[in-house]
Length: 73
Image (cartoon, rainbow, N blue to C red; front, side, top):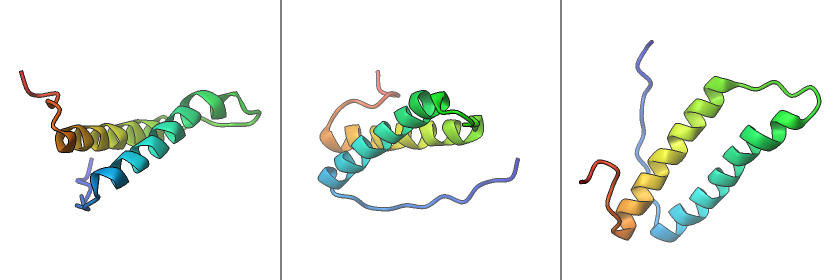
């Protein structure tokens, strides 16, 4: 699998919180609501990548707010 380029962006904590709320809601919709619509086709790769992105944003937000990260003991 070829390497995917990455990017870095800067958000204020408030911007990150607002974005995180939106993407968490969208991911929930993709996983649980859209799947019940007639004719909808689930895209597992898109959901996996989306969930990964949400996780990265959650960790960055928690770190900015001073919470311990997943890797901390």
